[in-house]
Image 1: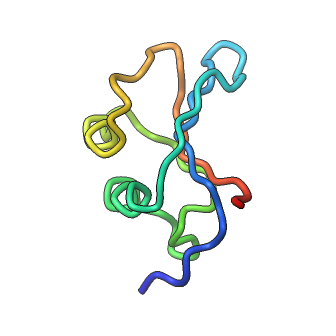
Image 2 (image 1 turned 180 degrees about the horizontal axis):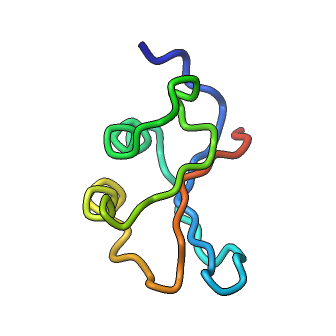
Length: 86
């Protein structure tokens, strides 16, 4: 059972493979993160995906279907991350 949702803001972050700087960021809503958890399994002690999670290319099709974010940029590595919300 998933505990109470924390006050966080999730995002899909794209980092440059060359210099590791953040190049793109797309907000992820609560309903989207619930669906993402079915594609990228969070750690047992992190049901709301507070930690950072790599987004492997082999699940990109499912992630794109949920987030409507388009194809991945081949020059970026992607992560799902969370930060303090309002």
